Image 1 (cartoon, helix red, strand yellow):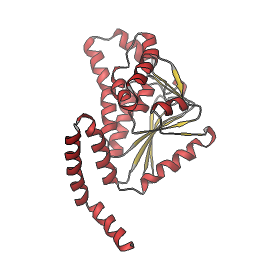
Image 2 (cartoon, helix red, strand yellow):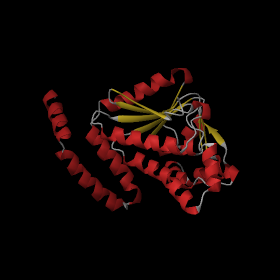
Image 3 (tube, one colour):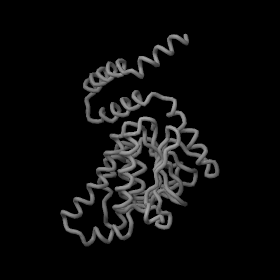
Image 4 (spheres, one colour):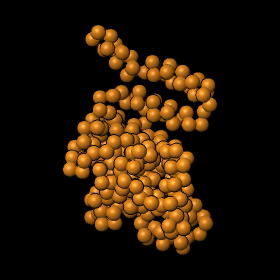
Amino acid sequence: MAEEQPVLYSVEGAVARITLNRPEKRNALNAATIAGVKDRLREASKAERVRVVVITGEGKDFCSGADLSALQQIAQASVDENAEDARTLLELFVLIRQLPVPVIAAVKGRALAGGAGLASACDIVLASATARFGYPEVKIGFVPAMVMAILRRNVSEKRAFELVTRGAEISAEQAREFGLVNEIYADESFDDDVGAYVKDFQRLSRTAVSLTKTLLYQMDGLSFSAALETGADVNVIARLTEDCQKRVAKFLNKE
């Protein structure tokens, strides 16, 4: 059944949950899994009631990286086939950034290689106390090329260099110290703690959070003055939204 449904999707209240469902393969990524996650993200994006998306893995691990069969295909594929395959993962990372609501990685167990990349690509990472992270691609002569575009924005240059060239696993605590993880929760209460964390987004303005997310990432390539100018424009847009006007009126009436 897991092979038939490599990705599970559910919506409870304002929370959409995307679950990698290949526990016997440590939720390794293959074409079907990547396509499934992208489809579910698009579905969540269109659902007005969804305020936050949580990506997690079934079983002991979040995601162990590329599936062995996928690696075999890479070795046998042509340049054009490899380029097309690489772009499928690129599209996933871009989609997460473009989604109008926060995307949270809830990481239990190991998040390695492409799995660490998937977690890093999310807006927020919540980890269990025993979670492990790593980018071991160099050990098989591979390069975590697209992941570096994300990693470089998450951690310092020296930490990024260390992570992608040594290929060592790090603990959840180290990952938080480096800037890869936002919060760490005890293994036994992890699911409940994640639920409590994401609940805050249910009370927030979807429009305001969406504008904030877009602006934050848009500022990556802007100069200081250009960032301020863009911020001023978004400030005006936010003031004119129906959600802002209703919430301000409610706040003033309450006062």
